[in-house]
Length: 135
Image (cartoon, rainbow, N blue to C red):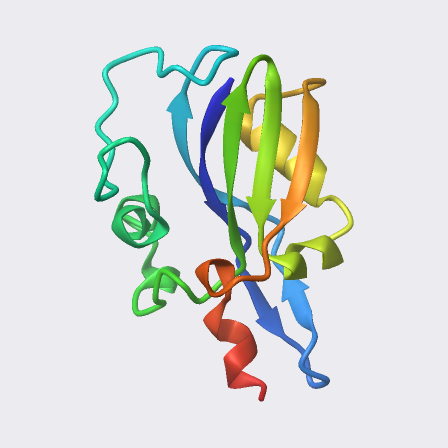
């Protein structure tokens, strides 16, 4: 099982609606059911106890030519936290438009049948640049 951060790559159609690709980009931290990292993990947030989307984007997109020049905050994104055998997913509300979003998150983070709560975060923290282009 893993905790960490993710992005849902997408584009927009003629009506300005998001069209998701078939993938999820994830930065994974292997952890136990209490969210404790299984190995020595290096975190890149200011407080040193987490990873940020901004600081992890380059690692996640390494070797992906099609993603060069795309900023870290362009795609809808979120975070998976693990605590006491449960997963809490914070995410941009646009991800709800993808029918299988929870299946992709479960698979990518190896959380299978774990109890998962989804918390929609419409704050500036999870806003995505792709939608600003359509305004």
